[in-house]
Image 1: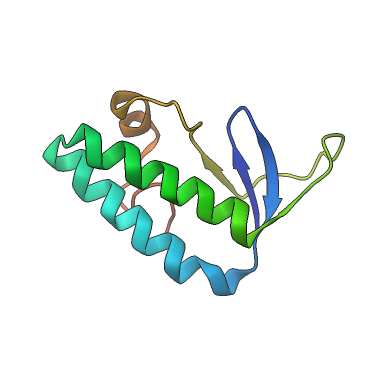
Image 2: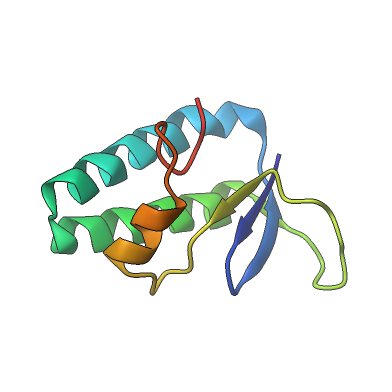
Length: 92
């Protein structure tokens, strides 16, 4: 799957890593619902770090369609809330 981190680029992430990514996404959703901005920031950074760690970066000139778009590391709680679906940032 191709994952884009807004403002950074794209990574190809194998599907086997989405169990861990979904756990972080669930934590992020719970922190957003509770309004815990400090925990939200830490979990958002952990989610983006996991994408970077598990994924292989695509070249900057690659124009692959992104199947998943994640917010930038400095996104606010409100900006991320606007990006959410019922499943969080990561469907499933």
